[in-house]
Image 1 (cartoon, helix red, strand yellow):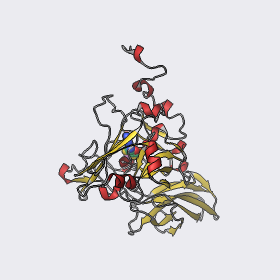
Image 2 (tube, rainbow, N blue to C red):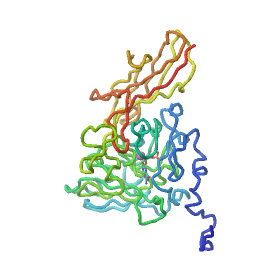
Image 3 (cartoon, rainbow, N blue to C red):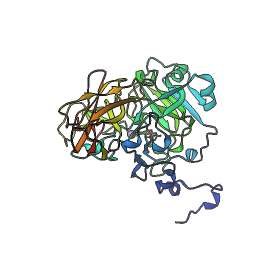
Image 4 (tube, protein in one colour):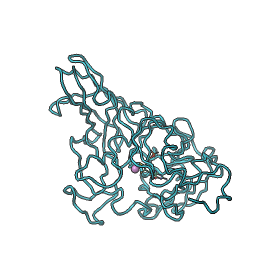
Length: 388
Ligand SMILES: Nc1nc2c(c(=O)[nH]1)N[C@H]1C(S)=C(S)[C@@H](COP(=O)(O)O)O[C@H]1N2
Ligand SMILES: [Mo]
């Protein structure tokens, strides 16, 4: 259609709606991802492409609630500021250079997992992107500790929660509308692990992942890790930004039968993500030898810190063997596990993997805890192996 004010468009400026009509261009640097939706752009990674200890850009899943902002499409960091305000003694307005000069720079491998990862396995189905196993990644992030920045602003005793803001664009194109604005309890924000990051895998954060600044707060659903970060509002109450209420990122306060309609007042915010594991090698359906060891490997992680053990089964869960489990590179990095499996005779096998967290809580073979929007599904990952 005609653009009445086209003459005012700066040279080379692509209107947001056109640029993102097809996710194709934005996704051109990605490799092997499954596109779940185009607008907003959502794409997940098949498990066998997540074998790296540090997830490369090419394989990192994408979860957009709105449209990628023009500043990110242009990779233009000029004048970028992040505001820290609300329940703080000294509100701050920090440029990226301020962050780099005033605070210690740290690099951490941190898992980002969408709260809806595994949604596809709930019955009855729930609305939202039908993520299977691949809305998770563990890149290496560089930035400053969120805690250090909050402490520089001086968190008041009245602080209860954070509220995060970015400059991405609502799907309607309406600048007044919030895309997503979530937060975490102030105690979580003041832990050591959360970062305000400007680099991913040693490069400026790519447009799809939050250029030029994003939060990475591990252990909680990915939605708290605001991309395109412009503001952290320290609140004196639980944050009530977009997607904090209703069924968004909330679970029933008690177990419900699948399909139950749960009253809004009985829903509570999803915080710590459950323990989980992936089988990243071999690819499901791969051939395997009979009577000789086959290496199977993957990653395991938990929202409450380190994983205690990973077990694997080749007989549909009747018996389990303990996998070798590496320590985490740093807290909230996913941990490598490996096992050598010997398949006794020709035929169809499944490998099931089950991680256990430090509290002894493990992954179930069926989807646990049905909830209206299908969050926090840590069902065991299974792959097929064909011996013969
Ligand atoms: N500004 C902004 N931040 C955001 C989102 C978003 O839509 N806009 N999506 C969130 C959700 S739901 C997830 S799971 C992660 C995904 O991060 P990624 O796209 O870099 O993989 O970003 C979070 N941060
Ligand atoms: Mo998410």
